[in-house]
Image (cartoon, rainbow, N blue to C red; front, side):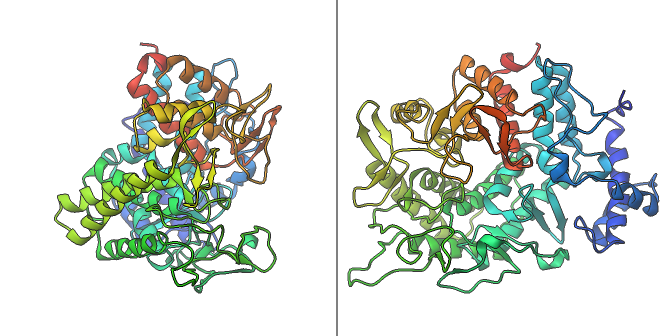
Length: 543
């Protein structure tokens, strides 16, 4: 039997000493990958009358902390399990091995655990909700927060925005959690201010953490110079810009805190608008010159990008180009419709925040102007009649008449358009598109077998590996009780008894999956469960 859980009123007081001692031990060992600064330890220590552990005791405990990648693939002996049919295990590291702890998150875990009808779903929710904080906060201090994806030790702008989204509503209840999110915004602004075309970054130098060599970034040339001590990978993905804006907006809406609106942040916004202007123009100028503010050219083409890394040509439409999709795969056509939809929503949000606080009227005007132009262009260029499906959204277009009809599991996706806030789920064009996407005759990347089904993409795992994330998108945009519950059941039964959401799953065998430690998918699943609990509590709770 596991040890009894401390009462909720005492648990935060017990966690803080553990964290304080943990941070002290880490600071005394500069080789630790989880090192934080002494100032953080001092701050935590100031909150406590005493610490139950000496630094040497904590250091000994840390030596027994598991490798989190290996930990996510197996169930250690003695794990607490649900009382459901599947007996899903707790996949949380021991308290002293967690990378961050929030009393507000722990209270939510306790609240749901006691009320949910399905013990297996409750355990999956707990594992998913806590995954990011438990395992991926690599470093946080100096007003900055470095969040890794899970099994890849770099901070993807897109991933980290989505990893932290689930905690935004809890930030007002936990000042340390709010500080953590604000630090992620600050670090993203720092990265994008210098390298707006890049989407994945190394730890900040102030952290003392060593950068990681990324083989996939070797041999890549761009029209600008990169510092590989700062940049992990420089695939231009417009959704990174949208994600950065989304994280900021959600933080403001949840907390009312405007302290992130620093001169450095606003300077990054200026840089973002320069990128948007550059990526709005046609590939060729009227005088026949290439406009190549970004190119991804490989001397040894592991990722073949046509036209010397420029990609497929585009004609100006009002949309904004991207070179890579949210899945990190190269686009077919440069104007990705769901990515542009995200940009519309977040530029409107940016304008609203700045206007409410009388900041930078010039940026307010730009944000609203670009949002209106892009939204108009989506409906003009991104919608078409398709035989058998009616009027639907295309996934990508080029402005010359070229269109790709498909979807990818990664968000932003066409399936996730209502979740993004671009339109209502009842929109008739969206409903036609939704039916098309979840059908093998309509979406080339939808597949279904006896073990699993869903939408995948042209990622390295292949056509038979749809992503659970696509079913999460289907649930979070559904208005049907039956759809929600049936798809939750599919996801719950797809974890191979590990109780974590994986990247992709083979449709014929759930044992054949990729990425056991993939934090974004878990946070997105937890976010979806919270939405269902709020809007349709009768589906999940006993009373």
